[in-house]
Image (cartoon, rainbow, N blue to C red; front, side, top):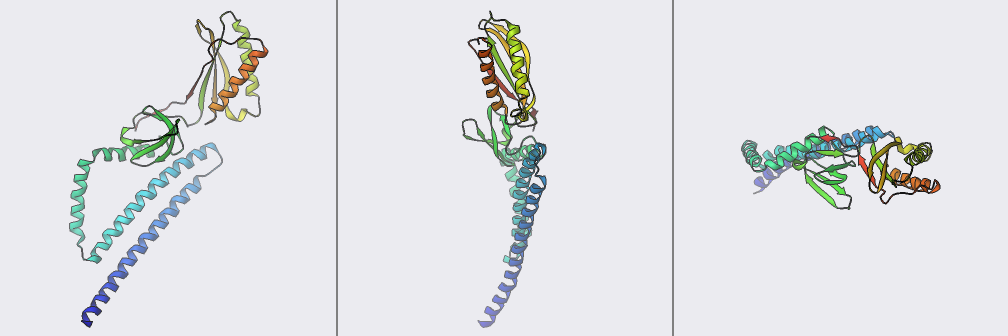
Length: 284
């Protein structure tokens, strides 16, 4: 009885030590992977707008790399530790291969999600923090994995879209945003006087030191957009820095209202603003 207990303790001690070493190595590898991914994000940081976009892309890639790497390390450690419990790895590996084949046939949608997710990240179609338009929804990307994209729409709801359902994507958060402001004046009003007033308002806006950092180009008076029963529609165009188009449009509307009141130019019954981001079709 004592000899059996001694052999069992020696055997348990030897195998236990090997299992402990495997666990320690796996933990060290996970820590190293975490440090490397964090370092990649740290290197990509910078004050410039291009650097901020690169940081978002790197952060997304680092998160996916850490998730996939951790899974592979844990799976490798588990397979390495199996012989210490008396299991033969070869039948387990063969069974895993058969299970993977069956899983592949039964989970084609999941496989398509992963493939599309890979190309979304690899081609830099969008990253966490980007404002995108996809499948009739517009929202900011809050979470991105190889399987799904989670974004918060304008109503504040979280929308989850499997990557296999993502086709054409409009990224509204790259380079610059563009807006068109339409102003309607009565038909009997002198168009030349209204255009001259708009040119003055646009010029003052461009030269305003408080607003010039938000402007990329314009605002520019494009001229007469259309004629209608309500009056003559005049259009202005403005390109702004990212996430500033709404602020610029509101300030431009306010200045147009004040400028027209000062010049005693009446506005028509309609005063519409159409805002558009830069639409870039991307195919996964």
